[in-house]
Length: 249
Image 1 (spheres, rainbow, N blue to C red):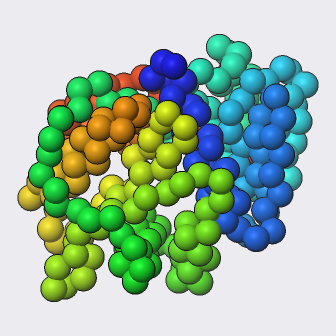
Image 2 (cartoon, helix red, strand yellow; image 1 turned 180 degrees about the horizontal axis):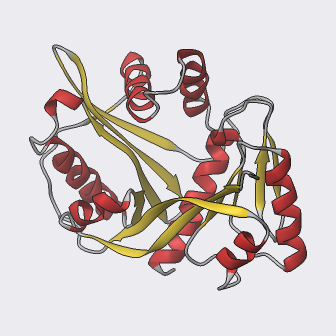
């Protein structure tokens, strides 16, 4: 399995697991794409991923996007055909966001143990901390449903790691396990404590643990963070794009 294949596999399975945490999500896995739709108006439960599109499939997916404004279409490395992005643009879908896909190439054999596996009440605190950090501008009621979706993710094992101090959660991160691949998600540090190397220590700890298990480790990050992850041993395997239905003037 190449790094790009490992990334595509893990991201696709992880996204569907999270969508499955919303009670009324409808999930379809077809050879052309995996599609999740829900009455919960948030991209966590309205998405398409793992694309292998014919022109007719692209027409169908574009129709879904126009009917569902919150639907996000994720184009990952190894998706097909090679001109997939152009196919989507030709159908009035807009490329609104980019992420860098990365795979760990040089993992440490041993790293400082700074985070512990979150269980019981610590698990609830870790999930809330992650949601509040990544969806800080989202209304509180929606964030509550996102917390429940992450807690209830189905089909893919999630491991949460946390550092706590007297002020509460200091840092958290998630590993999602899909066969021979682990995905690193949601690495976050309390805003006032950033820049002290805490995030680096958490990443190196989890990278070392994944290496001991003999698994591939993949992640997606903002392009501005690719150099930081590169310094921790990750290498880029391609760019992921997020498409939505373009607004008509």
